Length: 305
Image (cartoon, rainbow, N blue to C red; front, side, top):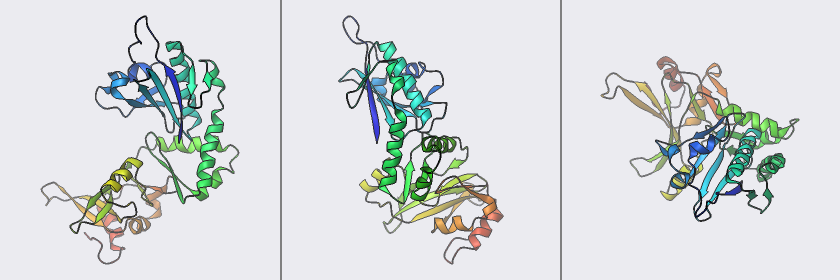
């Protein structure tokens, strides 16, 4: 869910002005950065790149997306619902500066028109509350708010608690922004077929590396789509691949594969794990002896050193 705004490119004497690059666009606002573009794409015109994610340094949680629509010669700014106050401040500043540069007004997807100065009067907190309330009404067991760096998992219970805060909008923004600042290694979900053709999901925990793992695996949307297209199910078994040093292996390491991610996480000493949100656990670096002690507590059939 999101809301889009449109700013038409400036017209010259005979044609529209050259399309801006991601870097030239973010330079309009101090503290605005391009995220996620590889190689020299940030230097290419936006009509060639297609889109990019812009992140404002002050209180960012999700960032906002910027597109160029060649058929309309128009820039599009897409703000996710709900976003943080910081995301909205960055988007509003950006739209205002871009509108000034293009000498155009800003038009939202509902047809409402704003001047470069008038956009500062938009009631963005209403959009944030709308998004949070929509999630509350959906009442799913676990909500996932995708961040520009890391996602925030929030159970229905925690979401209801959020609405009891003095300022739910501020509290949501605080949690989203803090999650983006976590420096630990976030394990990326993968899926594969075993020898019997069954799809399995997996996460990796490396010996001696501070890692974040979820108690309830919920892959990002693009991975879920890919899984479904390949006949996999999000409800498949999720294993944990433990990466350890092994001098006898040609690669210098080997994997120990546990069949029950949740059981492994429950056996980690409380002194070595911290909940970051309703699902994700930050695990302090575990050495070989500590990993061996955890595996020894798992049922028969699980790997041992």
